[in-house]
Amino acid sequence: MEEALNSTIHPTCLQEPPLAVDIIKQLDVFGVALYSMLTLMSTMSLLLYLEECVFIYRKVPSPKKTTIMWVNGAAPVIATMACFGMWIPRATMFTDMTSNSYFAVVVYKVLILLIEESGGSETFLKRNYKKTFKISTGPCCCCCPCLPRVLVTRRMLFLLKLGALQYAILKTLLSILSIILWTNGNFDISDLEITNTASWINPFIGVLTIISLWSVAIMFMNTCNTLRSVRIIPKYAMYQLVLVLSQLQTAIINVLALDGTIACSPPFSSRARGTMLSQQLMIVEMFIITLVTRALYRRTYDPLPSDPHETDNDQNTNISPQAPQWEPAA
Image (cartoon, rainbow, N blue to C red; front, side):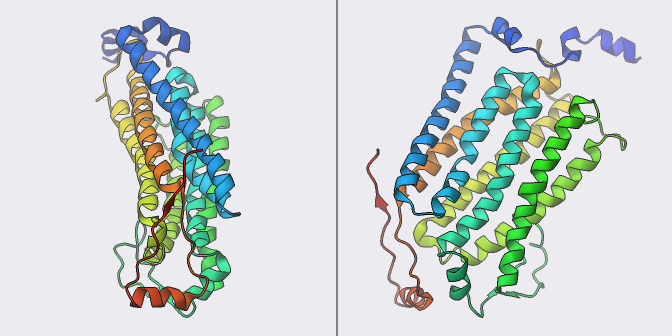
C-alpha cells in the first residue's frame, strides 16, 4: 500500500530541499520579481537597522544604547536569516537556530530595557520601595488571580533577571546541540517517536520559553504605567508581535506542512514548501516591524525623574510628560 502511494507522488516531493541553483533555474518572471522584492526588503531592513544603530550610539547614553540595539535587531536579523533560508533551503536548520538564539537574548534584553528605562536597578528599587508586584500574569499564571503579590526587593529583581537570562543561555546551547545531532541524523522535527531527540529537546525549550516570558511580563505589567512617557507600550507590543510571528506562525505552518495540508510543488516537497512560505511571510512582516520600531526608537525621550516622589506628584496633578523630541535624520 505504501509503495503504491509513493508511486503516485512526484519523485521530487520525496527528496531533500532543492539547491539554490535549482531554485534559480525554476524561477519564472513572477518568481524573479518576488525573490528580488523579498531580498530587497531584507536588505533594506538591515540597512535601516545599521543606520539606526549609528543614531542610537550617538544620542543614547550608556548602557541603555547597547540594550536598545539588541532589541531593535530582532526584526532585521530574523528577516536576514529568512532571506538566506529562502535562497538556500538546505540551510534552514542553521538560519532558524540563529534567529531563535538571537531572539532568546532579545527576551532578556527587553527585561533589562524596562529596568534601564526606570533609571537602572538602584533607581528602580528606590522607586518601588515597599511596593508589591502582581505575578498572576501570562503566559504562566494568568489563570491564577489568587496568587499573592510579591514585595519588590533586590532578590526578587535578581530572580526576574535570572528567569529571562536562563532562556538566553540554555536556548543557545540547546540550539548548538540540536545542530550537532541534526548533522548526525538524530534530530528531526518531523519524527514524533519517543526515541527522537527532538521529542525531548523541544518540550524542554518550551518550558524555558514560558518561564522567561513570564518574568518579562511581570516586569512590564507592573512598570507600564510609569514608563508611558517613553512609549513603552507600543515598544513592548512590537516585541510581542515578533515573538508571535517568529514562533507561533512558523510552528503552525510547519505543522500544516508535516500534515500534508500544504501540498508539494516540485522542486519543493511539502515540508520544504511550507518552510519557504514561512520565510517569505517572515521577510515581509519583519520589514514592516523594522519600520515601526525605527519610528519608536529613533527619537530621544526625556528621562524619568530620579526622585520617585516627583513622578508621584506628576501623576497626582495630571501633568502630562513632555512630548518626545524628534531628531533629524542623519
